[in-house]
Each structure stands twice: as structure tokens, then as C-alpha cells.
Amino acid sequence: MTSKSPLALLPLILFLVLFVGSGLWYQSQDVDFAFYQISAPVAILPAIALAILLAKGQFNQRIETFINGVGDNTIITMILIYLLAGAFASVAKSVGGVDATVNFGLSVIPASLLLPGLFVITAFVATSMGTSMGTIAAIAPIAIGVAEAADLPLLLTVGTVIGGAMFGDNLSIISDTTIAATRTQGCDMRDKFRMNFKIALPAAIIALVWLFFQSSNAQITDIGDYELIRILPYVAVLGLAVAGVNVILVLFSGIVLAGGIGLFMQADYTVATWSKDIYAGYTGMQEILILSLLIGGLAALMKSQGGLDWLVGAIERISGVFGAKQGSTRAGELSISASVALTNLCTANNTVSILINGSVAKNIAERYNVDPKRSASLLDIFSCVAQGVLPYGAQILLASSLAKVSPLALVGYVQYSWLLAAVALLSILFGWPKAKA
Image (tube, rainbow, N blue to C red; front, side):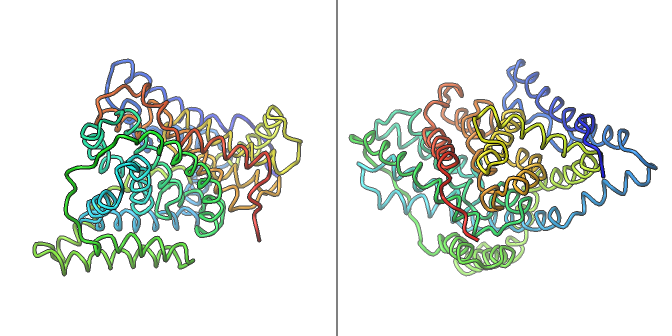
């Protein structure tokens, strides 16, 4: 049996120091997107080298342990889903799906419901696209124009877009956070979606009610043309996923459907264009794909040296700070939630945080009898909560740069993320919703 050793966690600490440290340094130099100047797949290389040096046994055995971690079934399945998810999002956007969705939503929303409607549109687009960044990039410029035309507070309007984007990213079956959470915890996306939705919906409803009272004098102008058929790929993918169809088949079907719409409805859309869009989707997933492979290998090395076992024990002891009874399911859920949220504060990346905590969370879930879909849901929720309110996170930085406002000023207006945190903590405290076998 491998002994528990905190020294085996030094590579992980080195990775965080390099990744976070470089971000802080660039931030001190007033560089835009400071925490994304040194990419995580590069920052992790010295950590892998250190892990190999610390590992015991012959050098070839250490390399074999690393390669086995890279080639883990969960990691490889995750990679395939990442590729297909990126391809679908790219093709669907290219054939006009995002613009059609936004314009359709604005055309049916009464002026008095502008902010709640903007939240719903953003949430649907993010759920369909599987990316909060892509959604914010697509909708924030429209929202800024709407805020000016309708005399709405700019910070509140942009904060509404970020909240809706995080809601959709948290629930989307093609989001990299969902893929990482379900694959590392070993549960179906449909089950995780249902568990997640029961927690996210109350927070969203409260946010919508609050936003309703902020939209009394709003007006909507300059709505673009749209065709409903271009929204069909998003609706089909979401419906098939919730129905329980295999996610790989769901995404492949979405790529074919979106491509077919482009071929039949756009004269300049050819098979070659479709192919380029698919490959562009692959390219967009390159960073998280490489990072997933490398983290899989690093986790295998740390696990073989007892680092993850030591970390689980440390988190179990820390959970007592929250007043959770040792050995209770509540303690396990709090431990999973706190660990991924704290990691996200360090990495400023919710997917990276889930990948880092995946093995640890699964270990805690097994020890504390936390259902896999519950642990996957909590991983995704608390990583998205932290990411949605980080002033140095990519979502806040992108939105603030588009709106030309302070990231720190914007944090207080992402009400949905704060409400989601409160509702999720209450769900842990009261043990609701119950996970059904």
C-alpha cells in the first residue's frame, strides 16, 4: 500500500505557483488578460518534470506511470468529447445559430422584461454553445448597445450577460466543465444535468425576479433578421442530451445537422467550408485538450506516491471548520466544494480546477458516500461560482474590456453567481435535492 506523503504534491504546488505567479506579475505590469499570458499546458511542464524526479523506481517505470495516466480511459473519452463539442459549437455559430438565437429572443421579449430576457437568451446560447467566453463575446456587444438605447445601467446589463453565460456554461452538456466533472466522477451527463438544474433553477428564478424590477423603463430597438431553422441544431443537441442519448452521438448529430443547414441555406457554404469550421472547433479545444492529457499523467504520478491520499485526508480535517460532522455526507460535499472553489481562485480557470480536483473529489465522494452525480454537480457549480466573480477571470476581463468598465466594479453586478453560491450551500446544509439511484 502506498504511504501518504505531502511531498508528492510539490509538483502541483509548483504548477500553481508558476501559473498564478506569472499572472500576478503580468497584472502588476498592467498587461491585459494577465492570467492567460502563460498558458497552463506550458506552466505544467516543470511540474511534470519534478513529479518524475520525485517518483520512485526506475526511470522507465516513472515514464510508464505518467503515460498510463495520460492514456486513462476517462481522459481519452474526455478528449473525444472536447473535440466534438468544439466542432459543433464552431459549425453552429458559422451557419448563423448564435445571431438567430439572439435576434429571435429580442424580438419576442417585452421591453419591461429586457433584463430577464437578456439573461434567458444568454443562458440558452451558453447552454447550446457550451462556452461562457464565446457567449459573452457574442452577446455582450449587443447588450452594451441595448443598455445605451434603453437607458439601462451598463454594469447591471453586462453583469446580467455574465450571469446568464455562467448559468449556461454550468449546465451545458458540451461545456468543458461538464465534460470534465462527469468524466472524472463517473456519472452520466443527463443525471448530472438534472441534479445541477435543481440547484441552479432557484438561483436563476431569484435573479430573474430581481432583474424584472430593474427593467421598468427599458426599450428595445434595432433587432436583426433571423431564421428559426438556424436555431434547430442547438435545440436538437440540448433535447437529445437531456433524453439520455450518448453524448458522442448527440454531438456528431449536431455537427451533421448544423452543417446540413449551412449547405442548403447558404450559397457560399460548401463542404470545404464545413470541414474548415469543424477543424476550427478542434483548434479551439487545443489548450484544454493538451492540459487534460498532461494533468492525467501528473495526477497518476502524484497518486502513485501517495500525494492524493494525503490531500484527501487534509481536506477531511479542514471540513470540520465548516461545522460538518466527520464522516457525514455533508462533510464530503463541503470538502469537494471548498477544494474546487479554492483551486479556482488560484488558477482563474474553472475547467483546470475541476481537472485538478477530479481524482481527489472522487476519492472523497467514495469515502463519504456522496453520489457521483452529486459530486460532479458540486464540482461544476462551485468552480463556475468562483470563475463568475473573479475580477481577474477571463469572463469578467472580457466583459469589462468590451464595456470599458472596471473588472472590480463589475463583480458586484453578477448577481446570479452570488445567488448560485448561496443556494448551493443551502442545498448542502439541508441535504437537498436527494440523489436517486
